[in-house]
Length: 520
Image 1 (cartoon, rainbow, N blue to C red):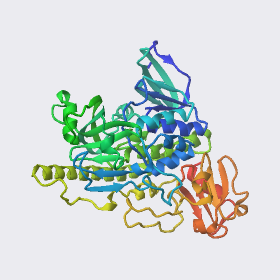
Image 2: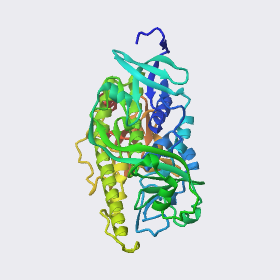
Image 3: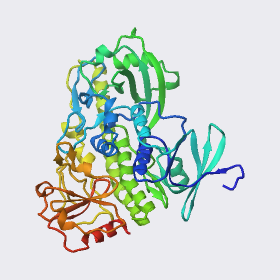
Image 4: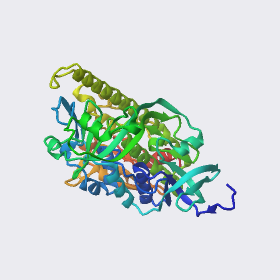
């Protein structure tokens, strides 16, 4: 990196590599903390493909914290589209369906509602949600770690120029084929590529066939069918057919959708991609941290991948801010991998199971149809109605790390940890949603600070001294399961850091807790 033709930029605190939903969310979160950020994205613009489809209720809680939830909902699908339907063809009857919990209808466990929208509709809202600079058409091609930072070599494809950027930390959100992960030599664990997939975006006059029963996704005997936007646009995605490069896509779509071959179909874009399934062996090295698909490639079945990446950066960004602003030690960043690595493996297991079962169902339906049996005859599905009820995985994630102080109590034990969510103030869990006022949730008390929720704020006065950002909020005792003087300390990411059910055991207990949590 000593080439005299390389221009040296000013230093930034955090360099984000990758401008998808995860990187854009990190940019917005870090800017709220006052961190100086630069984002680079190797493509010349935001993604033109619909790609990710579901923003679950937990991600919408995060976007509510960023004041982006109403913008995102404004051009998303109505809640009644928050379901999955199974048919043999577009024109056939449903043989089963399942609702996405927390998307199809409001739930008492959250003030937010998940939405169905396309990635190319989401990303502009995230881009507009922060002012930190973004450089499109700029690719990271090399990096070097130093004692006090990272030096990244960037290539500007538009100008053909190379730039060297120094950052205190580098956040990699550069996707499943992450250049950063490869440069670090970090391996992956998991099945790897589980399917070769094609996405075909097309125009056709299908409203009359589709609108009788709205759906976020239609799983067909051959692939899946989606309406891209509320006002129109269509896409099919499924396992890539043989000789795809020479495929008659209009004819293929007519067959798999079961529509009249005379119906005009205008193919707009075709994208071939690999459905990958793995978790990185490590989530970074030193001052370089992996997030989103760079850290874990989650199959799209179940809508878990993008949401897991958004949760990654929500977990990480407050820790980065604390280290950069001096109220947390660098060791706090170790808790990122401690907390998110097990969640990634758990999420991967669920998504791979989703994919395997989906492929089984579709294979059974194809065999059923090829046998000459009537399409309306039922076949047994390999899952129960609870299979798509993933609230335990979405809201029930609990962390066990050095950034959580155990209180000696037993955590809740749901019957099914992925399907069932049991609200709890147990340390490590997401602080439950309770309404404090008609339009104010406990979740609305969290932000760029720690939050102490207590029935008696006066009992905790004088407990905290700088440097930690902290706010104290009143919480009725019956809502938190606390004694009259008890308290719950909540981290900026909404997870319970510590709990004192009966009141402060000493005059410095809160400062001692924050010292232990932040290492400062």
